[in-house]
Image (cartoon, rainbow, N blue to C red; front, side, top):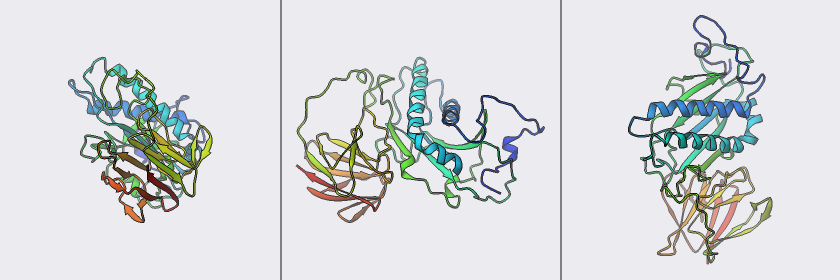
Length: 335
């Protein structure tokens, strides 16, 4: 019996009746719209649990688990699904803010990840279902544990796992730990971190303050402060590949080719699927001119391992060799 032959009582009403829903999951495989609909249902439901008459609160971190065959179909377009979800959520938040005008973002990022459940994964005591059953799981929380600029305690807050089928959803027992299932290997290329309000829909600036986000004034060109070279890979921009990048800002994300680039922190994309989104952040102290690095994926600096998601900054020397995921090397040089 496979993982997706899961807990029949969660899917079929006790009286044995079935619900026909022409607008539900499509036959044979999940669609992008199915993922988006399920994310929206969970987002709206958890807002009701987290919000009070005084303050607005909602989940911002989502891990979507689908069967492997659906993952193979959906993975390539998940970046666009993430973009759709963020726009949809922000429009809803804008409506809520009419009642909660004092709301300020409780995170700096949305985080989404798509994970495929290997075919043939077995769970003891789970009854079988028909092969045509279409479902997915979503694990969500108030904020991602690795939101490195969140004012939170980095625990992620209350975590909810929900099973979505057709037009219904039901909480899964906390004892069911999806991440620990045999063969479960979440891929970095399917994880996306997006600035909270990348398009200025809510009118916040990048610091979460109101009033300035929609005012875009091109800053004068700044002198380069560092050079970053791709030793055995390429950077990509507007479909073009290049091997060197001049950093002229105080903070730079380095991510994979599928990164969702927002108007917040500048993002330098590497033409590879083996780089997280983002994988590292390089920061310059404007007062001292020194540089440091924070890692979210496997990283080495001058052959020393940097612990990912530790919320710690690692000092960069004037010339530093940075290895990403044991495969790709870039060279940082202070100018």
